[in-house]
Image (cartoon, rainbow, N blue to C red; front, side, top):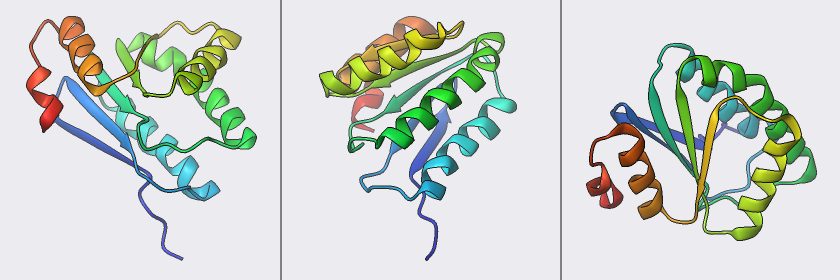
Length: 139
């Protein structure tokens, strides 16, 4: 079976970057594939904000949640040193609480913001970057 792309990165408006999870339940390989993609991306860039759109994410299994927490802890120092802010967008209150709980466990140095809509995500990114990106909400 061919590996599907679970996470799409768009850097066409750099220093605003968007990362969008696709609407399917990933295999373990597809799940770790998005982490590798992000590591490769952040290894070559700095000073940007990435909106991570969790709108399509289905509930992660316990294994994937543990994996995601370990990955966040692993890349935290790099994000902090490279001045990369992650704006986590999910309409699910339960998912936001879960993500915040994961971060509390390792007390990140990097900046993570949590919002419930893409509109809020673009507003937050615009404030952080001191440039209006709110037109990006619709494309």
